[in-house]
Amino acid sequence: MSTTLITGGLVVTAAEEMQADVLIEGGRVVAVVDRNAAAARSLTADRVLDASGLYVIPGGVDAHTHMDFPFGGTFSSDDFASGTRAAAWGGTTTIVDFAVQTRGHALREGLDTWHAKADGQACVDYAFHMILSDVNEGTLREMDALVEEGVTSFKMFMAYPGVFYSDDGQILRAMQRTAANGGLAMMHAENGIAIDVLVEQALAAGRTDPRHHGEVRKVLLEAEATHRAIQLARVAGSPLYVVHVSAQEAVAELATARGMDLPVFGETCPQYLYLSTDELAEPDFGGAKYVCSTPLRPAEHQAALWRALRTDDLQVVSTDHCPFCFTGQKDLGKGDFSKIPNGMPGVEHRMDLLHQAVVDGHITRRRWIDIACATPARMFGLYPKKGTLAPGADADVVLYDPHAEQTLSAQTHHMNVDYSAYEGRNLTGRVVTVLSRGETVIDRRTYTGRAGSGQYVPRGICQFLN
Image (cartoon, rainbow, N blue to C red; front, side):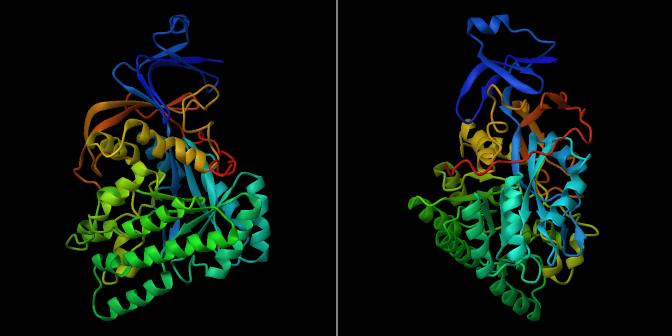
């Protein structure tokens, strides 16, 4: 088996930072050796990568993506080939995507459809969550079988009546099942029934522009749904993971639950940390580029999200990567904001935006790796295979230049979408080289990966529940 030695860099994991060399063999990390130790002088390999002046970090784990995802009469513009390539460019080496159950159809059918979408296409590793769109006795039984084979998390929606929505009774039944089978219930927490009333009233009053998307999806309706999801999980005895938390009032609900030692977890996304309702108000329908749900909030919510990431009331930053082109997709909602496909691109920029947070003093280097690599891997049963650099881990490794300057732009990104949500934003830090299970995917800013080299990864159960 070929060997690779990464030498000269600062190894940063969630647990420690050290000047160390990393030895890789057969796609796995076999040693991480302090450079000052005698053993480091005897390390040899077929290939040596010089990481002098660079960080050596685990590949990112993005636990919330939507590749080739159906929404609003169209599909997200990245498929597994283009989306995982963009992920690799941004230092993410594992994604957990959402397979969709169609109403009236079996979970297995939805999962098989997503396996077919991804098979032979991905250039980095991938796993699946399962979206429950139709909770009934048959699908409840199927949940047990999916957990056994490594699909261990199930997402439900309190939003989107008539599409993905589940009522409280369905949610309770599904949570009772996850309580019994070891699965993790995931929740899109917004009161969709009430939101639909506000949407109808806004449109009737002629408020049709994209900014009204944010106005009708009230902060209080996110907080109320978050509270209700927590109480339903308590009744069921189930763990709960709330996706894309955007508002300080929703954070407060999670913090209260965690203060009671309940198994309740939350993620946020870069768009809520860096963007706001100012973007939704861009003129000439430009705000449509920023329509996602939960929506962007007024900028004052950002401080609460950063604070929650520091205090561990939020544990994970994922992207909710669900891109739709401005021309031909977002413009389906001209004259009616409710018809704008909900979703934004982000899989390529998460690691860089979070490194900027280190530069800006919001989080530490180790917390960067924790919320972007280690904790998502633990949360979704992938650790220590993913999310860290230690003997036995997959050799998913990023060489990262913490001093490189870059400007984000649709002209230079690799996502298959015609705009950047961060157009013109200057960042410090950039990916140099990326390995996926020891195989080079990005080589000194040149793409060398191939579709199909990424593997499907079955997952264990949430590792915070032991």
